[in-house]
Image (cartoon, rainbow, N blue to C red):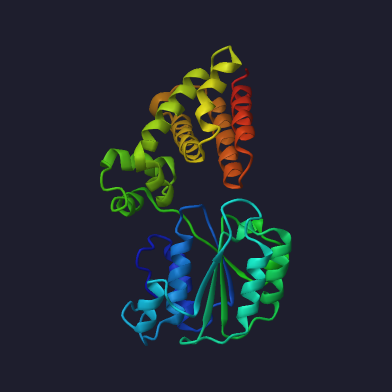
Length: 314
C-alpha cells in the first residue's frame, strides 16, 4: 500500500499494507489520534486503496478509481460527519447511512464509509451505528476517526479494529509543515514542532496569522504572573484563552514544552524546583486532554490557573 502525504507511523503502514495484500482489511476500523495527526488523510488513503483497480501497489493514483477517490468524487466512498462539538454527529445522519448500506457498490468491489469525528456521536447515534456493524454486507467497510477509542461505546469497539495514529518526530514534522507554512522560518517551525509534539495539523494552525507569536506572549505572561501573591494576576494573564480555542491550545502546548525543558534542566526555567515543575507539567497536560474532549473552556482556564497556583503552594 502507498501512503502519499501521510508521514511517519511506519509500523501502522506495514500493518495496513499486509492486511490489504492479504485481503484481510477489517470491515470496521477505528483510527484514533490527536486532532491534526493525519487520521482523515489516512482514512481517505485506505478508502482509495480499497477502490483502486491496480494489481500492484495501491492506491496507484493513476486508475479511474484513484482519480475519483483522491478527488473526493468516487461514488463508492461516502464521507459522513457531524459538527465539531459533542453529540453533534446526529442519529439521523447514521440512519441515512444505514439506509444506503444495502445499495451495492457502483464501480468498485467495496463500498467505504468514512465517519469523521465519530467521538462526537451521542449514545443513541452509536447504538444506531452498532446495528450496521453487527451484520454489515460483505462489501461494506467503515472507517471511523476519533481522538480516543475510549470515547466510543465498548459495544461499538467490539466490532472494530482500533489503530492508533501517532504524531511525527521533530525533523519529520518540520519537513511536513514547511509546505503548509511557506512563510515560517526554521526556528519558528522547530519551536512549533516541539510545542505540539510533532502534530503537523496543530503546527500549521499555530503558525498561521501570528498565532504562535501571540501564544508565546501569553504563555510568558502566565509564567511571570504565577508566583505573584495576587491570585488575579494569573487569571488576568490567562484571560485571552477564555474565548479563543486555537490560542488556548497553542498556549497549553508552549507551556508544556517550557515546563518539560525546565524539568530536564534546560531553557528559561532551568534551575527551578523540578518537583514543582513536574506537578505543573502534569496539570497542563491534564488540561490539554480535557480541552481535546471539549471541556467548558472558561471553566477549564479558571481550573488551570487554580491548579497551577496550588502546584507551587499558592
